[in-house]
Length: 319
Image (cartoon, rainbow, N blue to C red; front, side, top):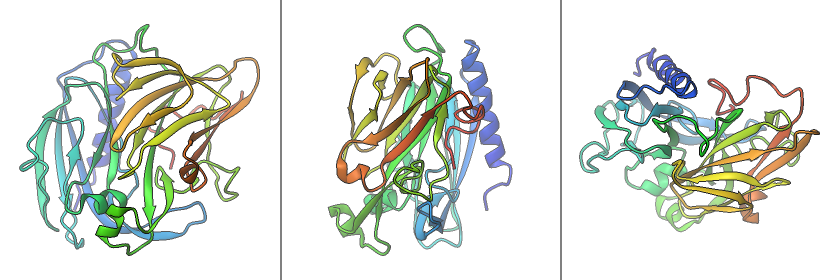
């Protein structure tokens, strides 16, 4: 069983990293302990409360957010719950490791430990790499690790007012065979942070959460594509991406973009700045219509009474 303090330790480490980074005095070379437990459980997959059997890290889709600073060492422990039926693994895209050793699967009841140094800044996916990888990922076994640059914020990488993490994944019919999942058969919807139309009360009357910011604020979106076969065409309706950093690396910056292609298993950072003189709303969408109209729409509301806690602290992934 996962140690009961593991989530608290993970969140505390993330807060220390964020505070140091924001101050411009980021401390690197720390050792950050992270523990996750694989849980094969029924998960709520829409705003109406419908459930489906999924495979998860710590029981959520996406799994826990990991945040460190470039130069930190992640001391990772993966626990495969003894009640599970499948072997599982962990593949951190932020790590340089041995795919046949550190990333190897473990059976139910087993535990694996490994360490890696976060050597490149950016926003990276992590996911299960056990066979069939397509099935394990599409069943919900993915999450995000943010590696903040050791230089901190600056002219080329300005400090945001708010930050949100959005992870876009597939939803297949329950019981779809692994070979059919790989071929795209049985696909039925898109999940944003684990739910169809998670933050879109326009298209789903059951949706109760939206992203929020105040007019004129710089809102930063850490976007990760966890779909197994298709790219996402990420676009802010009624807005422009002020700056986009490919892979989240401050060196890879582009300006004033309308739609950006994000391939499978990749992540980018997107900044949007709303007009400061009035309230506005944006819809952050995958402009592939089969994705957008099957769950991939997120509403960002820019108004003076925006919840001050959203997009800050531990509320980067709204659940």
